[in-house]
Length: 447
Image 1 (cartoon, rainbow, N blue to C red):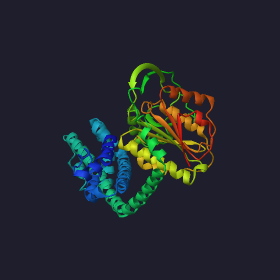
Image 2: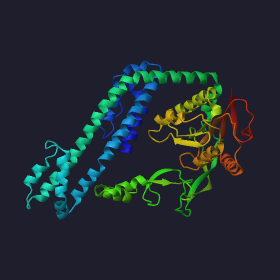
Image 3: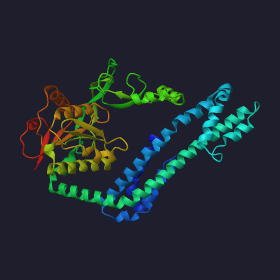
Image 4: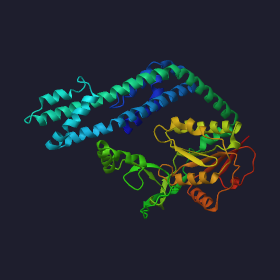
């Protein structure tokens, strides 16, 4: 499944679920997908009673279905990747000259005979018909049948895996949905007890923008000098490209085998090799120029959640309740959302990227240990504000604020963003006095 097909399938589950339950209108199938799309529609069709269920239970079911479909998408992609060396050999055989294909034939025939039965791909039958006069025709027909045999094998492997996994998922779905439903109810009750949470969800991301709420600054980019030196401290994420100095070690494993060496070369030529990257010296410099740009009514959100030991217990429940309110708003209004957790160190996840929503629970589970270091979190938030997707975001910090004020350089960066109309909000859990009262635009307090 291509990234585009996967994104369409996720949109179907996210947006088409309630529509189908409400009036029976099924969104169109995902082009090129004959397994996961039909299965998702079948599951929803067999659970039409959810249309009258409690919205929290319906949402729990939808999220469980989404998580299952995404996990199967991961497995399907792994199956496709496992067939890449053979697919590369097929392509080399198709594109080869007559002499090259003749030289490859014995190796190709042996591989096909070992992997496929005569009913799937009769390599010996083709070999028996091969003559000097017809070898081009035989080779072309064999390559076509070989490609189709690989497709059938991959599809059958996916179909069998889906059937097995679906049976397990459907058997335990009720228990998981009930557990998630109770969790959602508990978090909703917490939200009802603290109206400050609803107020934050209502205004964050400039939802109250009006005619007086406009910015006169927009950004453009100018080239910067490139630096090839990327230290371990500068590494920020994995991306794709063909910079041999930055490629992750696993990519070089393709060069260990002659069958996969061409795959490495192809991925290099297409700039698809996985490599480390840094947003630092390789990034273009961002300059500001005066323009009249209206502030978005429903803009992106950056949420920083304190997961240090001082936030364990009741404080963690309040912070998670706030987080899930914001996530519901972001999902419902199709707004981008970036999550940062911080304690001794900061971790981040872009919830705007396909498939990331299902990782939230796992992401938050690594938490509530050690002390609090807010400096890296603040730098990460400011850095995210310098990206195109989050340049008009608001920032919310959920914490007891038992950490030091920002260093002068970081504070100056925050002030610059505030001058550009970015709001830095805080949800303080507890009564601790903090210098952040004079740093953030507004802090709500709950106990």
